[in-house]
Length: 395
Image 1 (spheres, rainbow, N blue to C red):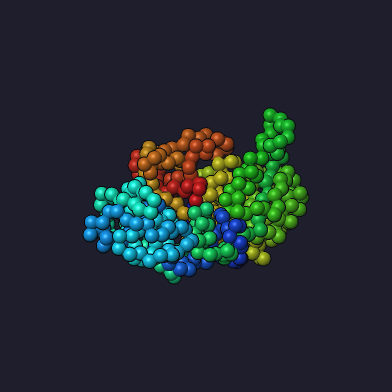
Image 2: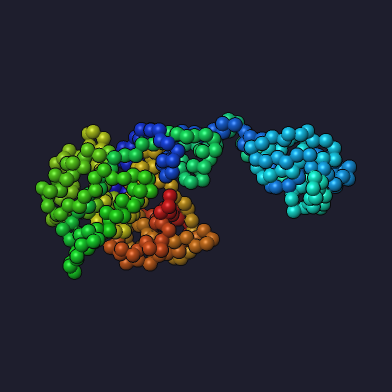
């Protein structure tokens, strides 16, 4: 049995970066950026009016001039048609290009306009007031986004701004999900008192969706060795295979034996963690990576969050699955020598509250949790306000 740290190291050593592909900008959200992004020009690309108002020369204001003749109106996307002279101003709209000679904008609320004249009465002025200067946000050639980086709506807007109609992202692995168990049924069918619904299949699909991965194969198999072997044989054509259940040591836990028969090399089987101890990770000669996760709901969520996401992170250029170090706001003890993961929720001040749960089979364990906190193997007792590792679900 491997320690938590040994298991992570083995997974790390078995990773290689996914290939890259080009996608259209409209398909970039949620994908992992595989190229650095630079500013294609200055931003703003010109001196830009920060609000509606009147653009004047500061020298006029210093002379005490407050009543100005409006010599031109500048709209967005347009240039001034007249040259500014002393005693004159431009009426200007938010976002419009401000001529360099006009180095101050007095907002519209501080003015009284009548026909072609305006009286300005701002309390005070400062250099380039209400003007965003060219290059103030970034200069041409500035590194804006560093790969790897998950594309979010706000980053997608930046990509559009710098003209990236297409971009390089990491390819998504072809992924198969196989759930197991005679007692497991689909959510929409009638159920008897001894059956459970296949929540883990939907959990795994949802977790993969965060990575924009749609499984190429998603099936449930009964505890029949021959059927399991046939299904897994088809699944091994994928790049990544995630199996749920039948991985422990029971009479119906056929996964380890079937994987061996299919030529999957076991990298490790069993990790000294709770929940998730029966985890098996393997690899085929052709490079297919296999994660066989335990069947209890919290075990499934934990092993995916800690181990599968570590693998996906490394293969998309990250250093590993990210975590935070935060204070636990309550004392906690454990009576075993294993590394333990438990649900926790963030309070409004950056601390962790314990989320109550009833073991790895509790389907409600993480309803109110923001992530998983870790109690190291060597730490039998965590003190209040002790800082521990926290793995947020919304990595």
